Image: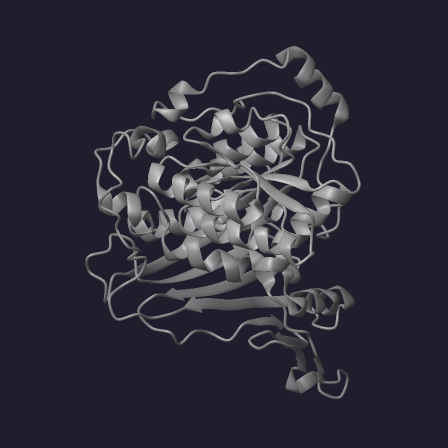
Length: 437
């Protein structure tokens, strides 16, 4: 059940027309969701998409401008300045007033237009002149952000990991199936040429049966991971809508450490697994044309950063339908990782460098020629952003799609359950249900 990155996303104009008609283009209240009483699959607004003329600038909004969101703002403004794409940021939203005020002022000055700022992103989505929305919020908000964006008739870019929980990934998948909008998931390594070359080799059959994938994301620091600067001005009240930040994950007492460094905490993030390993797993699973994961086990712990709740080192074993295994290592306390490989019965693909290297197994060396496919170096994150913008304009399918991201979220969720619970978990692709092994 794998698809080419250029296969069209599921669409249904008749279902969308029915949705638009029955909704009457009315707003649906999400007050309960925003204030922590649980998630909902209903979008905040139901609206037809804003038409984009061929030479018209793409009018873009950004939700969440702290950290990565601010980096996206700079990148999109540079695209326009350098003539890479006609795009203008027209609106932003953030629950923290200092961050919002800073980026609204910077973008307005740089672009020469008035950028509108919103504390509640649902108000931003009511803008009928916005074509596309980038969601750079914490991952517990991603599913509702995307569903609301689609309901508002916007194309969406959502940061990785696509969601916090596996079930939310399927909520997004179901919403995409009812929409004609594009959703780009922010796993930028999907743009690296070496993975496209590896997929061609896999499709050629030269590897024989693929037996194992292996990859890792390892780095190190003296102080610890995700220790972002704390702004003491950001506290509940005028400066911060804390209940809105908690949102679908339920109410919590304010803790400035959690707000600024949420990736360190179990309730709000899967840590290494969701923040780092999705980068490496996503293009590898795609290149090897893997189906759904069916069994996941994980182990790890805190070996250096003892103040962090999430693990600072993990090891995953993932079994896929069709008889394949993937091993994945992640660490933020040691930078030496595993070689990135696709192992086959007849040959192996090495992906640790910039190029794609095919090397036969010794017993097949007379039948298969070793070769190195030279791959150009690119700025993969910029290319992923540009791919989204091009697809917003052309309506062609984008590179990093929801079905692939859903497979990865099954791995992330089951690995997280395994590492905290001490047992393996299985997944049934037909029922979308997980069970403790």
